[in-house]
Image (cartoon, rainbow, N blue to C red):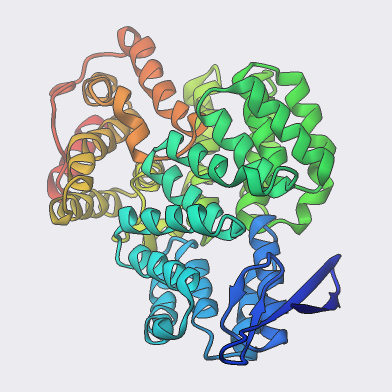
Amino acid sequence: MGYCILRLPNRFTVFLFTQFDCCQGEAMFRDHQGLAVTTTSSTAIAAMAQFVQQSLCYGNQAEYWIQAAIAADPEWGLAHACAAAYYLSQETAFHHTQAQSYLQRASTLLPQGNPREKLYIDATIAWGQGDIGAAIAAHEAIAAFYPQDLLSVQQGQYHYFYQGDNYGLLRIAQKVLPVHPHNGYLLGMLAFGLEQCKELGAAEAVGREAIALNPQDYWAQHAVAHVLETQGQIGEGITWLEGFSQSWQHCNSMLYTHNWWHLALFYLANGDDEKALELYDSQVWGKATQSSPKDQVGAISLLLRLELALKDRSEGRSRLKERWQHVAPYLLPRIHEHLLPFQDLHYVYALARAGDRNWLGEMLDSMTVHAHRLAPPRQQVWLNIVLPAAHGLVAHAIADLQAAVNQLQPVLAQFQQVGGSHTQRKLFEQIYQDALANLEQAPLRTGSGSSILFSATRLVSYLNQVA
């Protein structure tokens, strides 16, 4: 075996390994992780290494580098699958459409791939088809047989996260730890999995170890912030995140706004509503990619928490109304997407608070149609949890507190199945508790508290009654 060293900008060195098959006399190229690849283009391998680096650190240049890899070798199926995965992870119908050509090309090139590449291509095709179970199975196989592949581990965690499977999220990171005991990016993934499984001491220790290896590990910063929030260490959480905030300019939009969102939550918990609102305006929404579902969800959840925190609810709603109305038009492309139920629950609340009754009714109807089209077991999640929760959230948004309590109470214990983190899902419990606490102070409305499920027509009529 021989190798050459290619030094690239941005603090990256790529080792290009070549191994010769003594029977066929053909060179086998390896990537920066030591994994065999079927491309023979050193430029493509170097670009792929940068793409993996950008993906693992949640950097803002991932799309550039995967396109560079494809340009260097358009016949490399793995590169097309990685491009498809990148666009699928943007979680919009537009990006899902954009991913299709890459999925088709990856499928065509699949026979030319090696076993690992074929597994990754299979995982990405399954994701594009909505078969998340098959995608997870392929990523688990990669973790078992090719544990050097941290990009696959990260994408496996992504799927587990939105399936609400915390133990799966942790397990896939633990599976490859013996191969990467001192890899900061894996330790950051492990720390987040530990925190989601409520192993807070271990999560903090592992997260801090990741930061010691690489202070610019934005995901590990985020994992430790989760621990501090869960433990109620508010002042330390503020100090922790503010100490890293200047480095977030290198993050992609999702983690940039999400880490500022966490900082805003610490300020809210500290009773500083004005600072949290300032961060909403300047960072969480002010610097968001406002067409991005992840950024939209962060903005919605922070606005909602601000409303819950403001002591004078009527004054608070008046102050925030314009912000709700600014967010709402960006949600129109989401109305019929239904890519992640966790996100849909935020969208319907925002549309209700913005007063966009026709859009809201259209989305609720669309969610119902979507739920009935799904196959088990996801259909049960939508029918038994997502739809009742959506109507409960709408009821709270329009101040029908009894209906909110009636709809939300039966499903609260099952919310983990819609995905999201503990901190993110805590919002739904807060909404329920807010409705319960204020129920006795609110006048009973005619028809309030029924188990009404809104159709587009009935919603407008109902909202007119209770507004």
